Image (cartoon, rainbow, N blue to C red; front, side, top):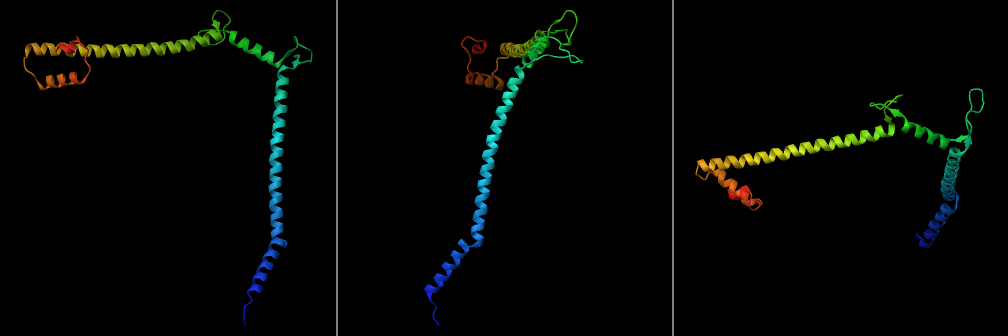
Length: 191
């Protein structure tokens, strides 16, 4: 018995076509395409809906801040002149910053300064105190270093005048001065 190559190829092609065109493959492709289209439609709808909602909220806030209203008492009678939320917030902030406060920052009925002056004074005083403290520390450190150097030079001069011997410390001191930059005419240059 001989195998017919052409019949085998035809059977394979027929089976593949049946699988691709027939039932299962077409259903899978259809459901996947449907799923992708629905996901894209949902994304586009969400983007458009979010943009419109943001626009509407922005408009409502903007209009709400400037829409005039009249405050009413507990009986529903108008109290005061018509105003808007924006003007009312402006008035509240102006009142807050212009309120007189004592040295502890609490509102006071007499004397004191405005809250704005109090806050600015605290900020400036804090920065000024930090700066002054740092200048004091830097000055004390510089004084200590200068005093130590001067004392060291005086002791070396005194010891050199009494003891006319070049010690190991003298040699190291001379070497360190050669390695560093010593200004001409300074006490270190004379030793």
